Length: 105
Image (cartoon, rainbow, N blue to C red):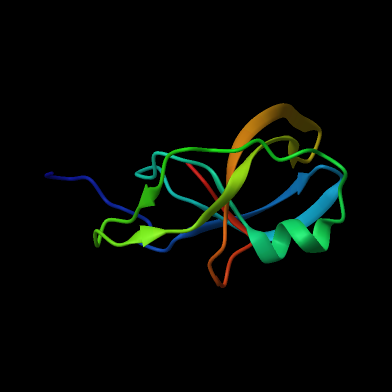
């Protein structure tokens, strides 16, 4: 596009509070079709929210299948100075290692 300047091409990584746990490395991926929280993060959160079974596998863009633990709805808080958003988000709990705590779509 002519005369359009993009400030950067870096990934957007944010800090959010999920079920009263501050998670410092959440990748925001607008091209993702699901919200993901990784099993290791879920275990460390030590929460008593039941996981619902999910019958569907998750396929990455490379075509390989990723192991899903379950699905969970978690309260999420996102803040910027005086503004805050409180919502419940459906997360797929994925048993995969990652540099991030999760992915928001």
